[in-house]
Image (cartoon, rainbow, N blue to C red; front, side, top):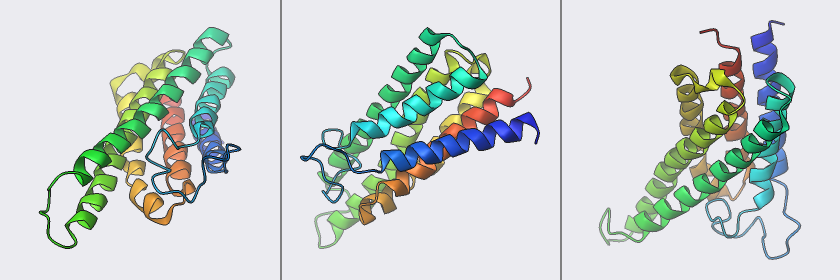
Length: 196
């Protein structure tokens, strides 16, 4: 296989694996997967979800980009902060829209606001999380700093962010975690191998 295909597939596999790890129940008894708001509430979302993805991206940077521990640790921290920022962005937008009077106050208006808040929140949160993941990956990998590469990573986060709506409706974290983490990781892998 060409290097690009191999790296993109490997990073997508890392994203799938970390997405599945992220979807596992947390050992904390106060957080249950069936709780409302689990996916978009930073106070109740399992932190291991962000840590798993951050560690996966940092490991990929270690394997394919540099053996500098400091740069890889900085990648881990920034990707994790991106995950926290994404969750908070989705939560804040959800709270603002659901608490507003968009679509009026008639019967069914709240359901419309909730759907719109989940879709818009997923798209915006996907962009925020992917943007910070690209920034973190760009610390060790100069290729990711090029506009065409970080833009692709952010676009992947936006597209996969749409899955927040079905994930929240079904209360199944893997519906958002697996595709988002796989697409963002694959986009980073593509950027690593794209020739200038």
